[in-house]
Amino acid sequence: MAAEAGSPALNWTFAVAGGASVISAFLAAIVYGLRPDDKWDARFNPGGTPTRSGWPVVILVILSLLIGTGLLMAGLAISFQTFFESQVEAARALSQ
Image (cartoon, rainbow, N blue to C red; front, side, top):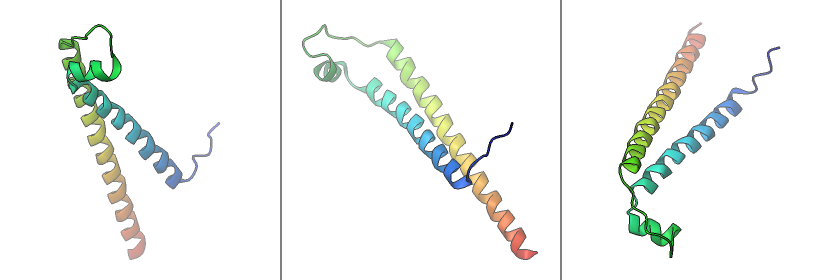
């Protein structure tokens, strides 16, 4: 019941695209969370009741920063590990 894995280049393309979209979503959450309330109201709530963000927004920004940074570091670590492992395998094959 194992399916074809596809080409490694295509798999890496999808992995990078997916990772970039997740990290950009966390970055957008940080940017929206750090936006002052008056700018938020002018853009997304014109003529409405003024919003007042408090501790929940601060906690969400902190969580977004922690999770986004962790995902970015994990992605970089996996990418570098895979690259260097492929370089070692290529050197081994060359020396044989």
